[in-house]
Amino acid sequence: MPQYAQSVANQQTPPPYHFPDIAAKAFLIDVRMDTVQSYCDTFFNLGKAEERGFVYGPLAVFPYALLMVIRYPMMLNANRTVLGYRGLPFADRGYASQNEVFLAVPVLRRGVGGARVLLDLSVEWALPFIVVNNSTSAFSGREILGLKKLWGEIDLGTGIYPGGFSAEVRLPGWPSLDPDAVQTMMSFVTIETGTPLPSVGRRSAVASPWTALQSPLILKAFELAAQLFDGANTLANGFIPNPMRLVSLKQFRDAADPHRAIYQALVSARSRYYDVHQLQLYNEQDVSIVIHPQGSFSEIAQLFTDQTNAAIPLSVQAAFAFRANLDFDEMRTLHTFKVDDDVCVQQPNQPGAMLSPNLAPLWGLIDPQPRLSA
Image (cartoon, rainbow, N blue to C red; front, side, top):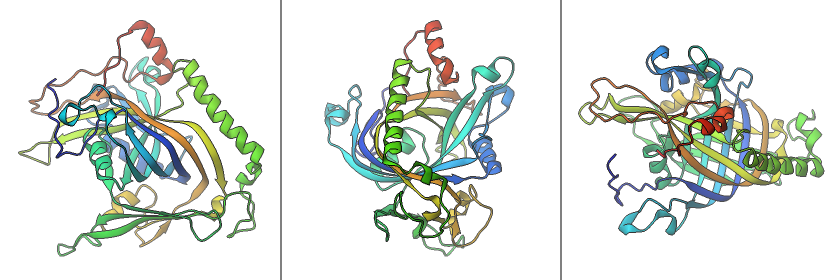
């Protein structure tokens, strides 16, 4: 392939990335399985199943999604091989910071036909939307990684209760689909929590199941377990697939006909949290998450509800906070789709790219070729 023509005009920085000491809030929420299947059919299950060899669908045993709010105090580019502007490696440049809100939905991939049903079996994470308040991150995520990143305004606060948390996400949108509607910044998601456990619920006297874990000793045990699990994955050489494997459809429009694509491929990346500490739990009854499906936001809201009200409260099953380090790396091309009248040179799929993570180390013994980076 030819060398990418880098320019300061595109504001893109290629992976891998290293994000030290992030502050994360995670909320386990209900998600509609039928809508998840529809999402998979739209963005992953392109063409005929027999031709592509796999099928994506919802993870029925886990009918939930993770809504994550993350503060990145420092975003570092770890790429020392690709030269940036004026021949300077990206890793030798400065850092950036951002706030981020995204939805992560677990999806199950299974192969089609014979042994592939098990060999290609894998649980991955789809990200229907990611909102960041850093334009470089938004451009890099969309153009390089193929993620559905949106630029928006994200305000993080402490909330009105001691130790509580609040957040508001605003996106550029249209208040209606009328032809005379003017784009403006509109509220998309609002979040508010009560005081972290142990505390008395401000909304209900009924104890949350999380209250059984409010002991500081138990919280420390969870932190230790997270660190040991990460260490076990390293020692096991990938047999324990603890990182989140993200999957997305990367595509490019035809310049002459922007309604058609000249390139479509499923790409994957690894998102790995480690050195987890400062774990806190919230009573989910003290958490309020409201999505505003107004105007042009209604499509995203369908993942949670079929209502069209101005404000829809989401059902929260669990809530917690933690700090950690986060690495984003291992970009891979899982599958390249055939495009009608394609004039581009299609790159072959990476060997073993669709293989179940549990079998990946064994594949390395059979075909020890180094992995290619997307």
